[in-house]
Amino acid sequence: MSDLANYVREHTDGNECSCCHDSQTPLAGSVDVFFFDVCAKNNPDADTLKKLIAAHSGEFGPCDPLDGNEHSYIEVGGWIGDQGMALRLMGLGVILGLWQVIHPVNMLKLERTDPLAQQMAGIGMVSIMKDGSRR
Image (cartoon, rainbow, N blue to C red; front, side):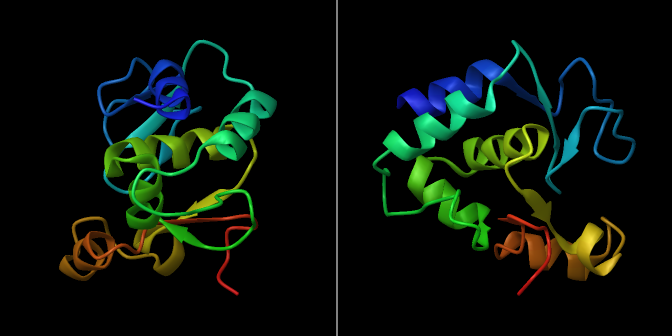
């Protein structure tokens, strides 16, 4: 596992974390990444995360989550090596103020249980962007 993936694993919890009940009722401090909520632990640092992102060469393809462009969890997952880890990285980046997460619930105001929202998320429409809006 890469240094970046290790850092994300050591500094996040997903789903069953101590601050989140479930994705329908997130508590303060958690970030909804559509499939689950992400919470920070062990005092993550934005500068450290940025350095690890810059040093990461990518597992299955290139990606620069810090470039301000939109990147889906599928793209980030190929880069970090795992889609679940990508979603945890995406949530951690929100917590540290690096970007926003956009998905069918917060972008289109669809219900999480709506089949269209599920389909959209399943094909990759859960993304990060610097300002949280599509260009």
